[in-house]
Length: 303
Image 1: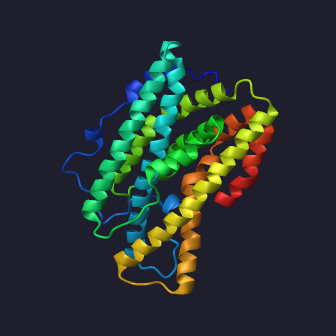
Image 2 (image 1 turned 90 degrees about the vertical axis):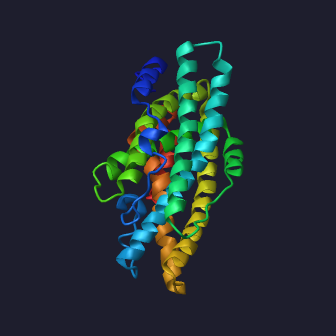
Image 3 (image 1 turned 30 degrees about the vertical axis):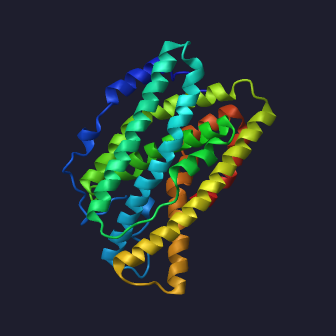
């Protein structure tokens, strides 16, 4: 695997990149609702037929709310997983323990960060936007699976956040600067989390035979299918919020087009962009080329 990743090096890099919530969003900070929050590569709102420019911006902002909410859910199962992985090693490698505890502390900070941005969104967006959950139920469902499968899901998410910022956000000057700052600071720390999670995958895969690896991939795909169903429900919530915010009801064919287009956009945002990341694929290949081929076979459905 990535033998040049070490707990000591990752901890050192993480400490250099660390920030505080007040560095990102102060108590009086407000989002600029005259601007989009999400890049088009993720929101895919610009190509929505039958919507005015204002409606596309509103939908983009609803997708921003979705992003805050989905990552709030995700962080809720990453945090206990990292703590559970760290606990057996408390009397072992000091660098490993410190790096994993730093990882956990940053994930807890991210939960607070996304909650703070959610509060700012609610303060400025007058329409209620529903979200799937609750977080405890999502965490319980994901964490009941094979630990290697869960670690792969988390690794996919960590690399996914890297591609979101580097490929879509960093050079997009049209976005609200405050929301863009959220995505930048999240990216800064998740870069180290991806390296730590690579090491966790390596540890959890150690000693597994081909059957054990295949079982973990089965479980990984099961988690992905369950999350995909949740994204479909979230898209329906987004449609309801959009209609309330815009004060109009879409026709049957318009609703079907909206749900199909936006569900696929969400699939790319939260699943496909992680599956496609070359470093995630590289880790899969170190488990087995068959494992990587299985993921490559299903990935186009989430593009």
